[in-house]
Length: 119
Image (cartoon, rainbow, N blue to C red; front, side, top):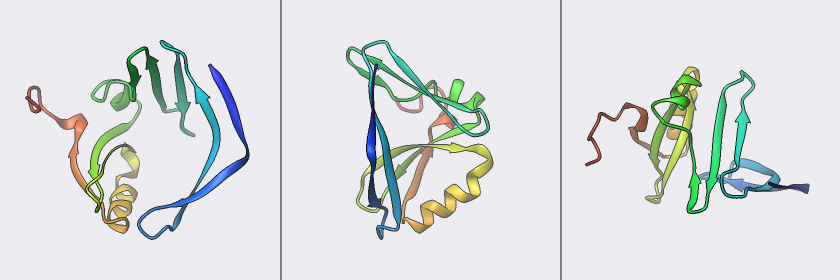
């Protein structure tokens, strides 16, 4: 693993009207079969694992993510771009308000798909 703090942190505007400022704090490079775990204030965890072919961008959507209190949303923005978003189950009201404010649409909850739904 290579950990490079961004000093000073890089700040940039995003969002429909540029009203959200993000701060890049670190660049992290993983070797194949290394994993990084992000921990939320409440102890919920989210993992990203590197493989030699790419990344597991999330733990199992209907397994570990759900047990850690996350729902997994497929979202489309007003430009037609798609995003996978992890939503804290207790913050669904804030999530829907965010989608409205950014003119984004919930396509589906990936953690609620039934077996064979994508075939």
